[in-house]
Amino acid sequence: MVKTGLKQRMIGQFHRPHGVGGRIAGWVMAHRASNRRRNVWVVELLDVRPEDRVLEVGFGPGIALGELAARATRGRVYGVDHSAVMVGRAAKRTRAAAGRIELIHASVDRLPSFGEPLDAVLAVNSSGFWPDPPQRLRELRGLLRPGGRIALASQPRCPGANRDTTARAAGELRELLTQAGFTGLRVETLDLDPPVACVLGLNPR
Image 1 (cartoon, rainbow, N blue to C red):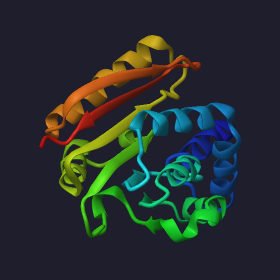
Image 2: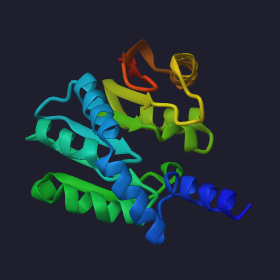
Image 3: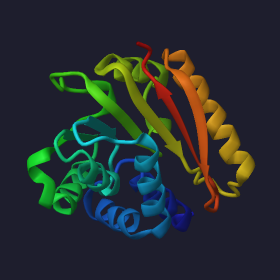
């Protein structure tokens, strides 16, 4: 029973990292090879341009943020995460691009203003934890310029996850984006174990 409780607390750290356990979870997320491949792949799919203004929701240790900053060289990269531990870790990881990256400690249901419209938004393995995901996605669509892009990615981490689990996750993400008013949806898959699904969409013009 004690072991089960400890395991559940550690799993919870990947949802909302905090304290010593959160720092351990952050180290695992930053150094797991599949996490890096997944994040780099999603950024590549988003086709970020040098002038783009991009937001990542739930950036964790900041792997994708660094990739975004390497592409949006004349733009601006924003990151929102509800974990102060992850904000600190991501700040260290992206220190070299600090002048072009703004990290914000906030939850997705309390997003700040970003001034001008955004060109792209992404979330990797975080949308499943959001309160009222369709409403959050409608709010994110309101932050995008007409024709702006969104990428939602999911690599299921439940016990026994396989290709079928990933396919179901992709279907759920498609439905959420459809409900929020995004169009031009397409699904891409990265062949990891289990596979990663990324659903991309557009804010209608």
